[in-house]
Amino acid sequence: MVSFASTIPSLVSLIPLPSSISNASRYPAQPGTICCKFGPDLNNEERFRRRDILQTIGAAVSMDLIARSSSFIEVANAADLIQRRQRSDFQSKIKVTLYDAMKANPDIIPSILTLALNDAMTYDKATKSGGPNGSIRFSSEISRPENKGLAAALNLLEESKKVIDSDSKGGPISYADLIQFAAQSAVKSTFLASAISKCGGNVEKGTLLYSAYGSNGQWGQFDRIFGRSDAQEPDPEGRVPQWDKASVQEMKDKFKAVGLGPRQLAVMSAFLGPDQAATEALLANDPEVLPWVQKYQRSRETVSRTDYEVDLITTITKLSSLGQLINYEAYTYPVKKIDVTKLKL
Image (cartoon, rainbow, N blue to C red; front, side):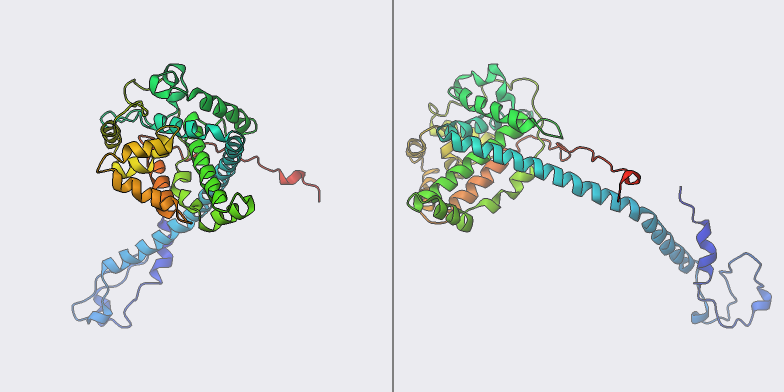
């Protein structure tokens, strides 16, 4: 409890007492009291009202509260910075591990992309259930027709998970986070590969090109969505179409059901099957999707590929957060305290 009684004496000296009061004898001040009323013959400059005192007291109380709470604020800010650093370091390790896995297994990238898409596309707006919650890891879900051929991608991620978890101080990474960050690594790998290709296969020049014109800085919002929880059972069946057998209208309907449209469907063409060119040829048959397919095809021919890459990253970010409550303290851990009395200088 904060006591304000001790502030009263110091406040009295701050009150602008009148320099002279002709009727003071009629209103003698009593010891230990503050006079708030004076005779009617006083002018405005010589008067002061009770609210002036209250305002002064209020200001002092506020200052007192701020002074008392500042130490707590400093501790909270320090703790927050430590947690941010812990999560950032852990996230960096995840990215390095997944990037290495993608680099060693480039042929599996299309399956990684579809795995992430299918895990997210189980989201149901009406019940606010499903979404990118890692439920696709369950054998009964990964074996469904729409997930045919994705088991190898899941196995690769499980091996990566062992490496990531091996020295994690803040607990194991959730499958929900793992799968979505694997998609990010896969996309970055294809972006880099494209830049290298534009440089005639020169890795050094391609890397420089991607660093100079690439969209790496667009991933900020995606990186903050870190702390998804895993589902404890498979998501309901029938929520994800078989992309290689679905009509364009069926694809549009599914994207619309999760809050996306023809633009996002076109930009996600690489996620809808192993052959992106074949998928885009199919999507081009729809008049609503065609303009976007053409837009992104033109963009991919430019040096920066800005339109395509930015829109793709934006769409992935939205898909990766569907229905998820993010735990922003996930993967953090208490810092070991140092007993300074045992230090030898």
